[in-house]
Length: 279
Image (tube, rainbow, N blue to C red):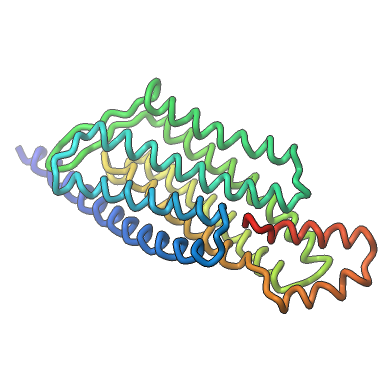
């Protein structure tokens, strides 16, 4: 009896912690939706619209997760809904990174092809997670608890980590190249944001994968993906905020373009592609 009581008490604590994490994520996604909504209103750029859509999707996903605490919702539905939303959000953010890297590297088709692979891998992962590697969710003590195969968590972390390393690396490389040539504050800001995103999100991918593998919150551990998703989304928004060229920055760049060699001019044109109207 004591063991059962201790188990129930631990399950309740894990559940309360998970509710806290999801509530924080819910609030963060609302803030992101408002922020990106205003950015889209000002810029009307498709990439900003994509980031806005995934932020709104985050609001819906976290709301449905919280809804289970107050309304009787089928746990299997919540599980499938969460899996699809989290991974679609991932795919959206990966595409934004890929597009930035593609434009910044002279519209390299090789890079576009390679960068598409991890995005397709996430799509395959969704199918596997809902079929072969299906998790099981059941209602217990007022919460939906999830039993999931460990290899699914490892695959998810590996895909996210590999994709973020590759795409962030491509973006950072081209920005660093421009920064060495022009030394402009715009490139410096983009380089800083690129490094923050790369290290921040990749470390988050690893830590999230480890915590979920260890089942730190028991059957509620998958909610940690919400924190991982929010962090990646937030850092992308930070990059987009620094991606708007100003009149001053153009005045600073033009004299250097006039005196540099044709090779340098080519590099400057590549930089302008990073500040593409779509971005």
